[in-house]
Amino acid sequence: GENVEQHPSTLSVQEGDSAVIKCTYSDSASNYFPWYKQELGKGPQLIIDIRSNVGEKKDQRIAVTLNKTAKHFSLHITETQPEDSAVYFCAAPRRGYQKVTFGIGTKLQVIP
Amino acid sequence: GAVVSQHPSWVICKSGTSVKIECRSLDFQATTMFWYRQFPKQSLMLMATSNEGSKATYEQGVEKDKFLINHASLTLSTLTVTSAHPEDSSFYICSARQGVNTEAFFGQGTRLTVV
Image (cartoon, rainbow over the protein chains, first blue to last red):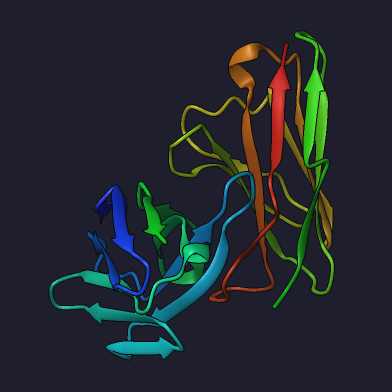
């Protein structure tokens, strides 16, 4: 089955700095890579995703990069703000999205 | 984006009783719904996958007689925790997708506490 490794498990940054979270996956058949943000006591919310036919995608302060050869993808948050503080999960569904394997999560703390 | 609603958002029940959690897709028809369990400071663990009109597929180690899943319509799936025990206390989250190769959207989760 798919194995998704995510690091770091915790990350503290000063407000305004950038944050980078990395994930690696094992299943070469994976072709869709979402990132979720989960605030305390809430369900995960999709914040950005990327498909295997592109190497990078940006949405304002958030970007995701994908290296299919190395089987890793990263989340980049620039100009971090306190409201970015949350737990972020990467995921790697198999083709058809029948099963989704989540990373362990990264607790991001943005210090004002 | 698509909206998935879970109800209740939290529930406290006595040990030995059953609890039903509802998951609704509000603005799309969900052919597939997923149920997850999340313990504190841990990741989401898939419990089962349910397709409308058919029996749910459970992950290894998940007791199907204890966690009853019904997906009777394209907008509603229910998870019933039967004979709940304190160790079943957890955060239960559903997600729903409209079709194959489409992203799934998550509900807000249900905090179950068994006392």
